Amino acid sequence: MTLKLSKITGSKKSLKEVMDFFQPDFVKIETTLKRHFASHISFVNQISSHIIFAGGKRLRPLLTVCSAKLCNYDSDDIYDLSAVPEYLHAASLLHDDVVDAGEMRRGKTPAYKIWGNSAAVLVGDFLYARAIELATRFEDIRIARAISKTVALMSEGEIIQLLHAKVPSFDEKTYLDVIYRKTAALISTSCRIGAIMAGGSLDQIEALSNYGLYIGQAFQMVDDVLDYTADSTEFGKVIGTDLAEGKLTLPIVVALERASRKNRDRLMNLLCQGYASTSDFNWVRELLMETGGIQYTIKKAKNLVDQACESLDIFPDSMIKTNMKVLALYVLERKK
Image (cartoon, rainbow, N blue to C red):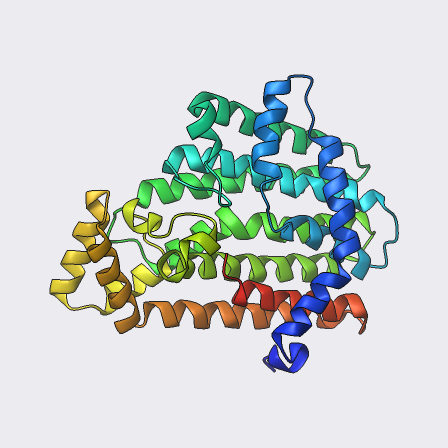
């Protein structure tokens, strides 16, 4: 039976209460992130700090901690492990901004615009290496294997998206493959390593991995919707970048399938030209609404969040289980 999140949360206040509940975890996560990222090269620390401490959501490390707690793990060692996915995420953002020529990241000027492409890429490499090195400190080899595999998947996702930019044959199946590799794999692994660290059973590990997978896919779908609908200041990055970069996200894929030939040709021309005026962007946004591309993507995201919550049903009822289900609402309701 599909789980209706409204029955769990009741209101937006419930989400705030859950985030308040996790506040002690957020404090420990921040402390751990500051402890492990440092290099003896101050320049590396400067750029690392710029991306890591620019106001990230900390969803990935929080899910590592929550997954371990759901498997009855009660040691602060889990916070050390939680730094691993956040460093990987930060590294990927440094690299993505260079590849995409991003104008804003977390409401700030991206690192490559301040220190140059080479510095941003090299510090991203450092953070990848630091994450992998930190993962190897834990006794269970499955943790290091999961992290290594995830780094490869993330890289493949970016490459596939690069190869398929501005290609009209890009379909929903390819889109799902890209977001699995680019986004969902890391969120899934964040949950998996927490369960492994806690000594969870194979069923528990897989259940939490699936929870993260569904949350990750939904997260990216909402992100792709926000790139056409969000307030740029609140979103923390310039909206409309997917259009300018020719990225065929799910709202666009649906619009290309459903639009008239005239509108489809115009949309493809805009995707291929590498820029879009304000009037062009507004036209595309209207087309996405008229063809149902936005609505279709949101519906898919909601279904995935329902699946994520159902994945937790193998666990006995507890406060942490309920809070993890409520966290799913954040994915759907976030504005940035």
